[in-house]
Image (cartoon, rainbow, N blue to C red; front, side, top):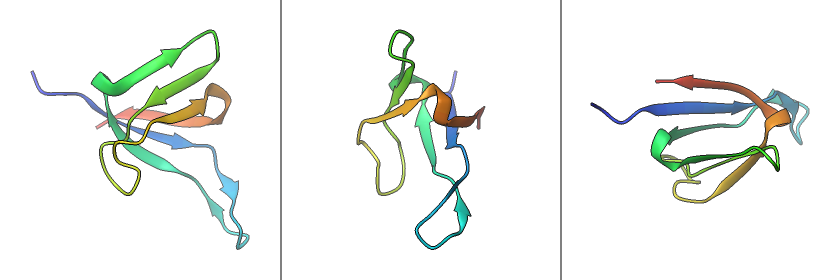
Length: 68
């Protein structure tokens, strides 16, 4: 069975230049941890400039989590 990969996207926000944008990362089911008590998702992106760096996202900031 192949490793499941997911895309995690944050809610849309206005960046420094006034443009509507969002953050997006690709991660694996093996490196995702759900912190129910603290209301956070903890993961390590697999690609891009943030690859391998631990990320914490509050549940309230998550817009989409979908399987690739």
